[in-house]
Image (cartoon, rainbow, N blue to C red; front, side, top):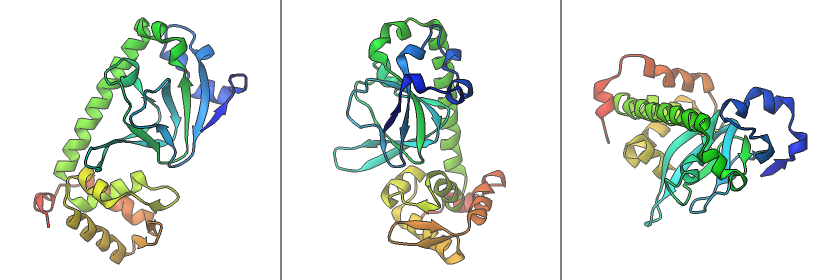
Length: 234
């Protein structure tokens, strides 16, 4: 993580995502800008975060580890959005893990210095209610789509969402669980993408060779779902 000192906050950050629209008081004295590299932790799982983050640029993934060692992908976070709001209000004491997929730039709000102001800020509370409601609607839509379209459509979309620099590296077990399919079915469709020339298997992961073809496949969401394929499991 790299921190940009407060006196170096530029008009680029202040103008593009003005946090003043979210708060009823001047939040700038409590805010700095931080940058995370790809694969770097924004929130470490199990820790109590001391800050509230507002993602300005980039994409991250939210995950949860289980006692048996398995890891579940929960959601993907795209700018602009808050990170750590549940912990701020005590909905959960310890954070779920959040890792940057692409390089991420965030506002870091040092809540230890202004927690009471935030808790009593009606403007922020209204904004957060709307933010959480939209996130819930988005999650419901994504779940519905996952049940309605064939795996090749959903996997193509998933690969485009999680790849960075044309490289897809997600673990098969986590991807299969997130997409709601068997491990075997996932490997079958990945192998089919390799056969078609969409992907190339390497030691580092899968190199995307034909982005356009993957996008066309992912856009199958907009066509009529194939009910037979949607329910097919190998």
